Amino acid sequence: MDIANLYEMFLSSKGVQTDSRKLLPGEIFFALKGPSFNGNRFAGQALETGALLVVADEDTELKDDRIIMVEDVLSTLQMLARHHRRQFDIPVVAITGSNGKTTTKELVHAVLSRKFRTHTTRGNLNNHIGIPLTLLAMPAGTEIAVIEMGANHQKEIEGYCRYVEPEYGIITNCGKAHLEGFGGVEGVRKGKGELYEYIRAHDGSVFMMKDYDYLRDMSQGIRKVITYGTTDADVIGHVTQGDPFLEVEWSGHGRIHTRLAGDYNLPNVLVALAVGMHFGVMETDMMAAISDYAPSNSRSQLVEKGGNRIILDAYNANPTSMTAAVLNLVRQSHPRKCVMLGGMMELGEDSLSEHAALVSLLRTYEWAEVCLVGGDFLKIDHPYRSFPDATTAAAWYRQHPIKDAMILVKGSRSMRMELIAEVL
Image (tube, rainbow, N blue to C red; front, side, top):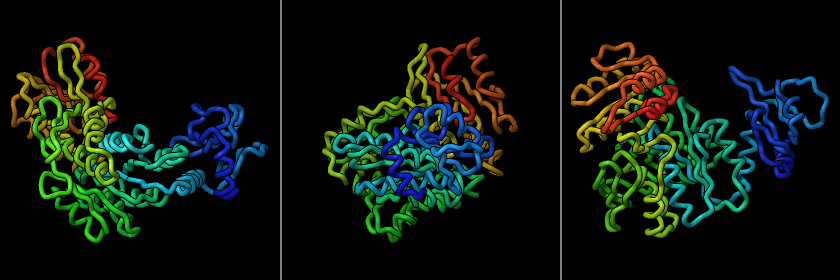
């Protein structure tokens, strides 16, 4: 069955599913496989559940016309997503970067939704499986799409662009993230820059943070570059307040009071304004959309609990974002500040030195409490309280509660630092 015929079946289905445990009757089951799973083994279960079709790439030994054999299930899913995307003659904005992707995506979506029927990435579906699923979930009547792209090695963004086919691109920044896979900071810029390469080759446009010299260099040759930043840009803004929530002065337009914790979110706010202005969203609607956005995904989230004020930013962590979060806490006026950091992942040979550098930064300031959890924090000398994992740390703080403090809780997702926040 070719993609066009499969697409006709897709249109008559209830959608697609890659997890047999979540499959609903009438959906198409794509039997993906990976290092620790093989969806082909669940073809029979999917049919019993009521799958409209099962797309498989290994012999299931089942005799059923509802099983479609293909050379590669993942490639088929991606090609189907591209076919669906091509049915929409709409602007598609792609977002990548080392830090701030999801917050930027949410803010851009909030702004554009004030004028357009906007489709965007749900949750963290920003990889080689999640992006096709995001595209295939795009409903009829969508007027603009905002697609988040995560990556940890070269050629990943390039691959995404083949089926997302974006007309607009945003690289939030290129920091010290996934250094192991990218091969250093220059590798990060090359990998993230694959989005700019696609935009350049297809005569598209980018929204660029003009304060970052490397993005200016990377964007050379792109037909249209819409800029944002703190000076000499199409959209200009600066931080007027960051304690505890970010407040932004949007030059010539007034102040925006956000619910975001951390002045490092300034670029995320400014790019949302730049995108909104480009697409003709009313200024008052943009400002209201940004003011109304309340993070609830452990990203730049401020939680008041048990007399404590907790900055919960526990979905991702790398040296760049960790440093920004610590320095943001330094700038807060609260008299009792505590830091609870989880180990950073995927830093390769730089891991020990980057964890040590973060400890050196912490030692520069006075803290009511510092807690370092797991990862390579366990391999370096430091004077702070330490635990092998968040579960152990949470148990200790349940018995030794902290009161009346402002507490930064941050770490890589695998560290599960939110467990500590729950008991503070």
